[in-house]
Image (tube, rainbow, N blue to C red; front, side, top):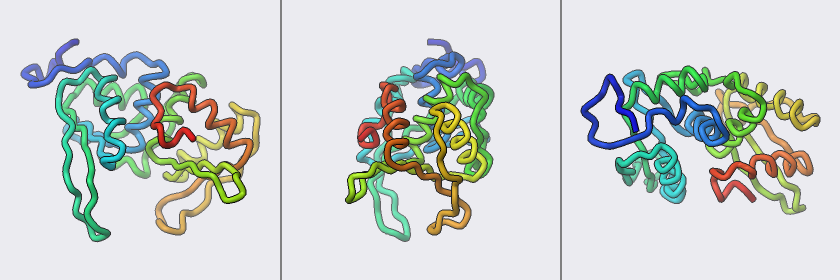
Length: 212
């Protein structure tokens, strides 16, 4: 473990090198953070999930070799109260590595996020992580599998173009999300969805409830 030169009086230990090395693990977790987390302008990495997915934060914490806590709390919103868990890490070096190596922007990333420039074998794992953060999977009544990504138009088109090329398939363009005027949806059905999900499932870090 190495210390953060700009924050050397840390209370908890962590491996600051994990996102400096691009592999299936770092690519997956970077993709997950790109979808479900954010990096503040003050170099704070924050990932907040529903309490039912706390085990995934524990897995991320293990990957980071982080000795700090995961905080549980109740979020009160206009839609009701929800149990949530949050992992929050202050680190200049980790934040910069995510920004430089995986193109995760600082601040509000919702409509700025784009795919990073990675080799195909790592970009697939990045997208798998992104899917676990901002995607969903379900079987229809007719037992047809559907996977859905929800994000901005730019990254969804990039994901579509990559998956079409990587799997030699054709899928439809992203379309407007009727529940949110600023978001788009990208859906893949049937055998194509099964093929993609099977490839995603080769990553050992996957969120279990989205593996199907």
